[in-house]
Length: 100
Image (cartoon, rainbow, N blue to C red):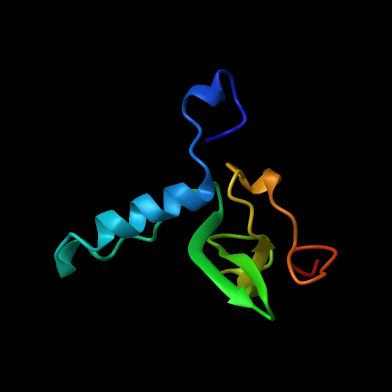
């Protein structure tokens, strides 16, 4: 859900979105398992995990100005109400998601 127009009608929290994806993914054949999963522009949602006792979203960049950042996992604090990347905060005490 992009932050445009009447977005509230179409918004699905990331946690719910990923669960819908996982449930659908589990029901398809191997031929259909080439999909990436939920994406917010250039940020892919890989799922959730517990890291150092903190529940987090596991994310990765699909594209970036710095090619070394592409595909590199990073973490956001889990928020079951977050619907877009701008709703998330860096996890594990970090001040930003990735180095500049």
